[in-house]
Amino acid sequence: MAASVPTDLLISQLGLQTHPAGGYFLETDRQKTEIASPFRPDAAQRSLATTIYYLLTKDSPTGIILRTKAVSYHIHHQGRMEYTLITPGSPLKIEKKILGTDTANGESRLIVVDPGVWKFARLLPEDLKDEARAKEGCLMTMLLVPGFDFEDHEFLTAEGLESLFGGGAQGGKEYIQAFSDHVWKN
Image 1 (spheres, rainbow, N blue to C red):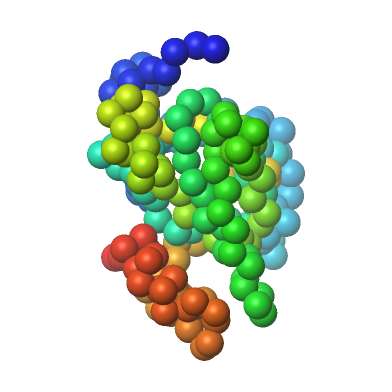
Image 2: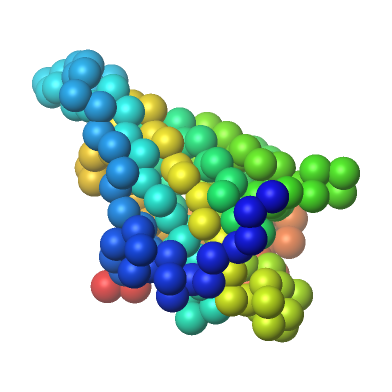
């Protein structure tokens, strides 16, 4: 297995840019094949699929809670990242998954997130305390099908968080408190 590359080198070598939802990213592919958008009434054309690199670092260890209309495939490169996945409904379904290499202990090299599921990514607190792990952050490739279109994703707001977990959801107050720093603030 190859040695991990420090995050500062990854950012410069891969040409990563600051992501508005936290971390760093770079679009690496946008398929030239286009399809009619399944999400727009005018069925405008869009790319079949897109991929990005996404990196969380010690200096930017969390993202903003968001969801997309597309299915997303999160493919591990280095480090570890925890995803909290929140599937709307009654009751809410809340899962935690770790993107990493320790499959014997439940980590996954691939996480698939269905359309409409809220997702929150963060570096694990214990990894941030470990100097070597903190240096490597977590790098992954994200594949979106159909391809990325800004109109297809939504950042969770404070009002949305309250709506999602208010109204008697089990553990609602605790989740609102835990996630309040990770919502979109204009």
